[in-house]
Image 1 (cartoon, one colour):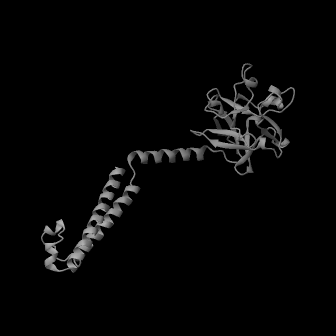
Image 2 (spheres, one colour):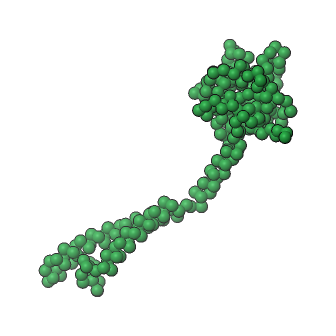
Image 3 (tube, rainbow, N blue to C red):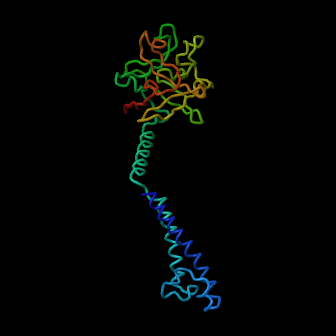
Amino acid sequence: MLLIFYVVGALLLFTCTFFEKNLEILHKLTEADPIKRCETQKPHFLEFKGIIDMKNDKLTINLRRALFSSAALVSMLGGMILTPSSAEAIKVNVASAKKVIASKPKPNRFYKLTTMFLEKENKCLEGNKVARGSTLGGAAFMDNCQNVSGQSWKLVPAGNGYFRMKTQFLEKENKCLEGNRFAPNSTLKGAAFMDNCQNVTGQLWKLIPARNGYFRLTTMFLEKENKCLEGNKFAPSSTLKGAAFMDNCQNVSGQLWKFKPIQTRR
C-alpha cells in the first residue's frame, strides 16, 4: 500500500512536468505569428478543441497548481500512512518498551533476584559473608528463595547508569557485590562476592534490558570484555560448585535476571 502511494505521487509529478514543458511551447507559439504557428510547430494536444490561449487561461493555471499540490499531498501521505504490518510492529515495540520500564527496578528499594534458568525452582541470589565457615567461602550463590536478609538486594545509584548492589544483611557493614574475573588466582577463584564498598569498577553494575522483563548484569570492570553475571545451580558438579560468576555474555537463561519487588510491611 505504501508503494502505491509513492508510485501515484511519481506519476502526478511526471504529469506536472510534462504539462509545464508543453505550456512553455504553447507560450512561445502564441507570441509568434498566428498563421505560421499552425504551419510550423504544432504540439499534438492542439488538436483538442477549446484551447486558444493557454497562457492566459486561469483554469489551466489552477489545474497546474492542483496537480502539483495533489502530487505533493500523495507523496506526503505515502510517508505517513502505515501498513497493518508496520502498525503492528510499532504496537509490539511500544508494549516491549512499557514492559522494560515496568520491570526495571527502582533505586534504593529491595528486590529478590532470580534467573530464568532457576526461576521455576524458586531459587534466588544470596549475598553471603566472606568467611571460612560460610557456604562456598562466602561467594554469592543461588539458594532457595526465602525470607532472609541476604536475599534482599538494593540498587544504589553510582552515576552514569551504574549501580552498586547491596544486601539488607550486609548493608550496615557497607558491603557491595563485586563481579570478579573468573580465574584460579582471583578471590574465590572468580566467584562474585560481597566486599567492602569502594571505588572499584568491579562493583559498578549496569542493567542491560534483555526480553520479557529480564536483564543482563555486567560491570564496568568487565563490560568491554563482554562478561555477564551468571546464576549457577548449587551443585558439586557445577562451575565453582554453584557460585555466581562472570562469564561470556551469551543467550543462556542463567544470565537473564529478574528483579522481584519485596513487599514491605507497613
